[in-house]
Length: 218
Image (tube, rainbow, N blue to C red; front, side, top):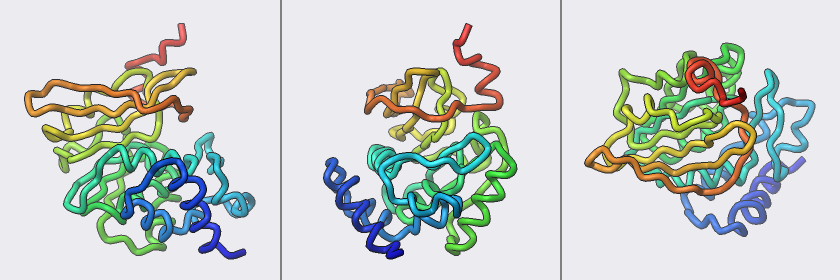
């Protein structure tokens, strides 16, 4: 199978045709071998236009959503980014192609090990991984230029906003059954500005977030 051709087709038809024109992001998507982050039994679907299961009731996001969230984060080469929910490491790898440092937190031990293995294979030097509860963020490395969250809390995770720099951005899916993807800006005054990007469907954020927000199911 010609993985490189499939990657280029994915970028052209699924990403660029939907309005994402940031050249650095498009090139990162062309470079990172998405199929290496997908389980072998479904690897032939790696570049299809939908999310895929990676085990443990988790998924690798649809390529367009990865591109969209990265684009909305407005990343710059000097940025230090916090990712909550490493998963298999694909979004982490895309970010690492674009910014100076990526700090990524994964709560599920087996996924943490999978991401570590996947990312070690690509020999990144600017990725820092931690197996911990995402709601705690990474206080020792804060503040961050941007925060990207790849699991959905029931409400905006205010503890993580404290680790965001003034003028920093957070991209986060919020909600239980119905979810909205939000772009949140922390103004220099500390005021929070929120914009809805689109409707999405992510796995729920677990751990402390699950207990605090209780997912509003009752």
